[in-house]
Length: 226
Ligand code: ADP
Ligand code: MG
Image (cartoon, rainbow, N blue to C red):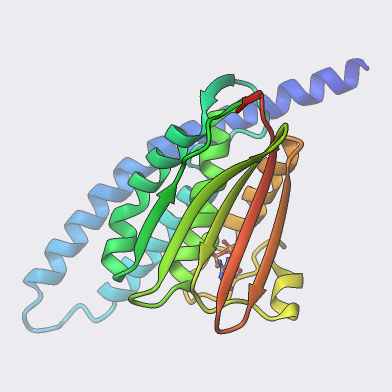
């Protein structure tokens, strides 16, 4: 028993460290990126042919931070009671620029009234990663719809995209460490999301059709519902 307590305390500290490192490292990265972009703009003779590579590696470092460390704390330590609809609308608003840039409609349907009690930051990290994947899989003029429903005490969050979809083989690999089909993917996002939802006692179900799209359903225990 003593060992258990010790271990979870250690994990907490590690998680807090990860979150603060992510925060601290992001600032100098942004500064370096800014100067490199200036250098690239000044490079009229095209002498610095390696600059695009350097910049894309910086982008990769940024992706790792946001997929993995952004709000990451391995324990569900800060339980909050909040309304799911407002929470989802905030997340969608956060990701709207990304969707707009790709020419995709990202929308949110939050008619039901559902209250959750869980670690809100963790849930945000989980949902952000899943919506990002939906946006990244969807071609121009496609859509990503985030919605919610309650089935008695169960709250269901649904993220439906009209993207590339996945084969059975791809679905089987989804969520394993470093599995990615993207040129600059981290292969961390889904694993982190599934881990968080699992830690919340929730369930994640994927259904996907190649060429048609993917639906991710997340079931969580509701605190109150109507
Ligand atoms: P990354 O996004 O960095 O590639 P993830 O763990 O988030 O890593 O996703 C792993 C892989 O799963 C992606 O590269 C993609 O091939 C596939 N994937 C995840 N979500 C979707 C989706 N909604 N539609 C199609 N493919 C997806
Ligand atoms: Mg991802």
